[in-house]
Image (cartoon, rainbow, N blue to C red):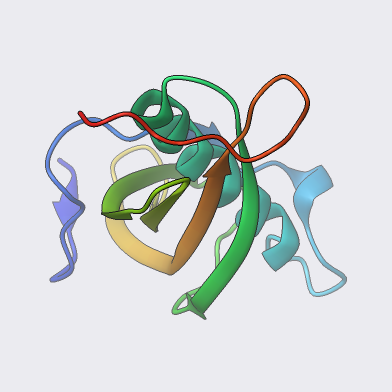
Length: 131
């Protein structure tokens, strides 16, 4: 039976789920933080693309916190919640949770604030329509 830590994921389905593999490890044998950050960027972009109704580009990552390591075999679920929508930008709070083993604990491993800008076909900022 899946057990949750005291930090719960946001409601709803994660933007992405991925399995941490041996090729994603650092020299210490834990999952490389850069790999995890890239998964978070993808998840945040999924949320931003949906809201912008088109292409987005990452322009900033703020307040990145790595709370716990990710291990080979962990299932990583990444959630994104829109915090702010500007004229051309979208700030997404991104949180990653790891499920340890098939029936293990789900623990929050990292979080950060990712900012995306909506772009047109020429890769220039474009206004975001009201929801």
